[in-house]
Amino acid sequence: MAELSPVLKQATPVLAERGEGVHIYDEDGRRFLDFTAGIGVTSTGHCHPKVVAAAQEQVGTLIHGQYTTVMHRPLLRLTERLGEVLPEGLDRLFYVNSGSEAVEAALRLARQATGRQNAIVFTGSFHGRTMGAASLTTSGTKIRAGIGPLMPGVVVSPFPHAYRLSMSEADAVAHALRELDYQLATTTSPQETAAVFIEPVLGEGGYVPVPDAFLQGLRERADQHGFLLVADEVQTGFGRTGTFWGHERSGITPDIVITAKGLASGFPISAIAAPAAVMEKAWPGSQGGTYGGNAVACAAALATLDVIEEEGLVANSAAQGERLRQGLEKVGSAHPEIGDVRGRGLMQASEFVTADGAPDGATAARAQQAAAKNGLLLLTCAPHGNVVRMIPPLVVNGEQVDSALELWAASVEEATS
Image (cartoon, rainbow, N blue to C red; front, side, top):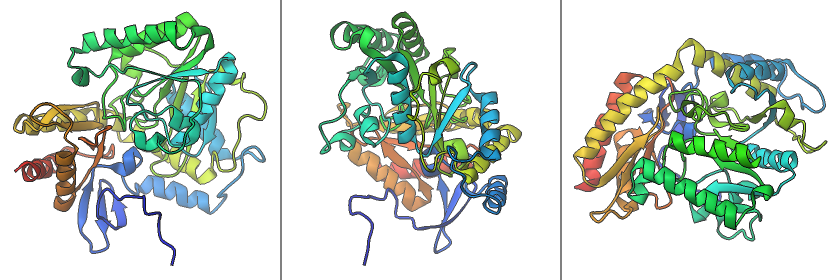
């Protein structure tokens, strides 16, 4: 009898039968508040009626039209619609299936567009599991171990993680920019640096927002040295952080944006966007793929954009994210085991530490498992697994946030007693 790989570890004991909005139901009919959203994927909630209807209609007309063989209208419409929400000037798109594939495509494009080979990433980064993307990933050795040698040409620079560094945010930014300049002077010549990759909020690395001043510093250095600034918006994009894109509040414009996860409310599709002057430097034949831009996924993405706009989900993410943050801070203030509460929009987290400030993955795991038992589905992250993150669908309302906070408070109490 065939079984799943034994290394696939389930974060919760739930065997899901169906989903609706912010809830998942198991086979016994028990309802769970899903504050994982498929790791930030079900942006409009589980089975939003408009997304379901769009996918069902598309399934009945054209399931797959391979887009280097034939063109189809859903892909053309999605490209037009994305042009309305992408940063100004990023007007050329290439579609694939997953975040990792999109990262690989962005790296390939950056190297071909600049004629340079090196890429800079930051400590705690997560960019995917395929070989090139894993080479850019430093959120944990589990992504990199046992598969070396990894792709060369990757330089890791310190991330301005103020809490971890025991610095003010301003000092952490100054430190990280100094270290980046040091890397450019000692490890990767600016003339050999193709791009710098950054998540506007570290995902697997611990849900740490990038300070605006750091993104601005990256933009300045990219302009100065002629390398590209790549915003990995796989998890932060499509309203997750309370703005449509996670980098928006900094006022900078990246050279390449990567998007996936919440793009189609659960259907597999991802994309990179870049200005025409960059995208046209991709070498002929370097972009393609069998399933990229699948017609059903495109239809679901179009419906997702409609729902986000019609239901005001970006503003809702900001408002409910603030409500969630305040509640998490209240729980954290009552429990010294929670050393830091942080996040943006509906991307919030609590970091567990020991009495001497060391990462406490064991307590974080107990709290996450207690929450699942109590009816609230959460995930852990960070290199030591000591951060519990909350990623509810963007449709979550205040009553549901308050219910989650009650369950979280009880779960933390249970885990720390």
